[in-house]
Length: 444
Image 1 (cartoon, rainbow, N blue to C red):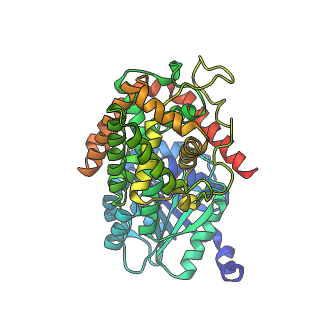
Image 2: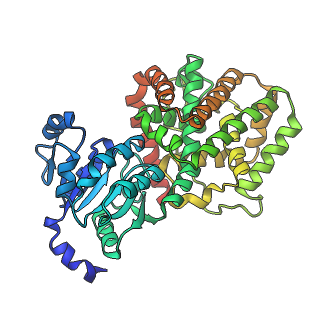
Image 3: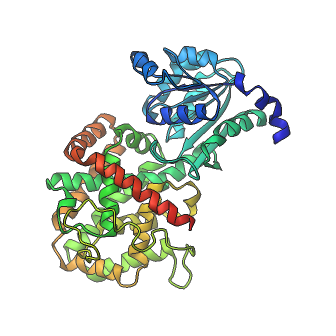
């Protein structure tokens, strides 16, 4: 490969990378690639030109242009980093200006509309190599999965893209567009739906869970910090992944169904039926006790997240209050119903997904903990109000996805985002520290 790339690397200073879309991910790519010595030309909406030009005035190798036509004409490799819902419109606008023989890719979380837009609006002499960094813009990309999709490209063009993106230090994963959408649906769509539903439930009950003694301990720390982390982000990130990814619809719908049916079993006191259903799901997802499907060390080492609490009432070594953990039971029931084994997708897992799978694994594989959860679900009404609102919220998100209602999604997200907004700064920092601690423990 080195010999093939020698002429390319020798003329790397003449190889221009274009970024259309300078949101958080676009800016992260611009800074990382330019720091590695690549020449960057970037743009966002034209009304943002002055603001961006000022922000990047002192960044070597980054030039801000007024629009995507100028970026497309000047760049050898163009990355569209825009909302999934807008990719068709933006590519239709700027795609015809693409430089002869250029390479074009996208950084959207859903590849189905992205690839369709490229095929429809790009000139036939343009190569298509898409990518997707499976993490947020504030996460260090080193050792994180980076999906590369060679959709319509020569080997030489694909190697150029790999060479450019190698400076991120990510682990390259090679997939088709459809494989990408299926795996991201399996690993992200339902995970996001769970945290979005938690936020709606706590909001509906007008409570900040970190102020309650009911929500203390490692599992609760993960729930609270990551719920806040998601609501601190932009709504379209999650809407696009859920609504535009055809593979995600059945996952989110099944999660809502699993939540509702398990909640009914708890309300009706059907202990044996609840236990039989949950244990059957456990065996399908995690395997029998003597032949587990994941034989590595636990994804969530003991105590690693216990110290990341926003709860001022939390005390060291204080036992958490028993909880039925409806969200975790529903997650495993959903995976079981759809035949999903989450460990099969670890190569493409996000830090958020590994944390969520880690606490789920902890509940289902820690002796006695699952039985305690089922007992609480039948006998204890402490979390009934939250569980009711969680069930309503999960169904609400599923309906929103089924009807492809972007505006409804935005409104549902925004009102809860505003409710939790005062605690975002501390929560995002703590969530970041939690993710870092877990990732570091994985390397040990």
